Image: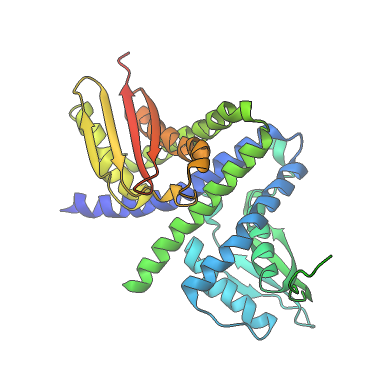
Length: 180
Length: 167
């Protein structure tokens, strides 16, 4: 009977590992394809962006959250709904700027980096750069231009992973394309 | 319970997006029709390493399998369920090392439109999974060649062929 429950938990574990391991394989491939870490970071960010612009639709369909009224609400939805839904973690929202246009997501654990160690010659690699792109792309689709970057990274020796998000501006809705 | 199901499917969706984006990347890194093979190869190798990694942690406590067929059944049931949330629908074998696994609703193919002109891209959407199976088998002590084909009608039916190589 205990073997049954082991199998069930193993199954669940293996499924989350699929994403983590696949992401790892991607980063490894990019490190082979590109000369330096900055290029890899850029490519991961770009891929994340492409994912983000499609993920937002999936998210809105699943979560049925309404339009956020301000950036604080956006932050909460990202941390408590989106992260929970897709990565199974709930980062905390802290370090708000006085103007309320910038905040941090603190991840106690980052599922992308399970079992990952950065080799010595990749000190500039921001391993989880995909996440920045995803957030940026997703928010762009709901008319928010944001800047997203890693302020702290456990893979680079910090205690926690900190993602800093800054609101840049509201994007005008695209008007239908006229005759040009 | 329903909320939990939503969460699980979100997992799936996220992986689908990543998988699709990886294919886009590998495809664009190898421009030209003639490079399709290189593309497929790269994807298959990535899948292989992931398949190995998955098995490494999964079967630490599971007792060893009694024979090759047992291993294949594990792939069809436990492995496929963990990775794709369902079992393989049909397993056939000639009892001489060739196994055909059939998935009637392979969700990684749902990104592909059900039109004939997209069939040429199907191999890229199957490559990673073939590698996954080959990698899993490899860490279970079975050396194999894994290929797959898709039939468009009914949608997303995928046949995986495992040819186990005797050393």
